[in-house]
Amino acid sequence: MSTKLKGPDGRIPDRLPDGTPAVSWERRWTEGSLPLWLVATVGGMAVLSVLGLFFFGSFTGVGSA
Image (cartoon, rainbow, N blue to C red; front, side, top):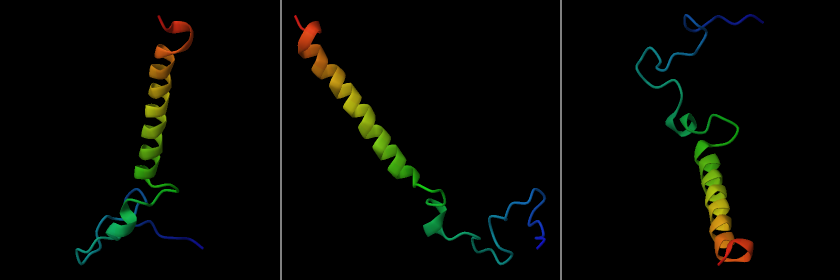
């Protein structure tokens, strides 16, 4: 089961010989296990939540005037 290398470093070329893309545009942004937009959205919500906790803590509790 030997496979021939597609390019000089083994990667599949971006375009086929007839000029069409080798990977369809639908799969280009979701090739990983999780889409990047989903990771960024969850990360952004986590950052906003932590910042909200800091602002809430500054108005209540030990640090309040």
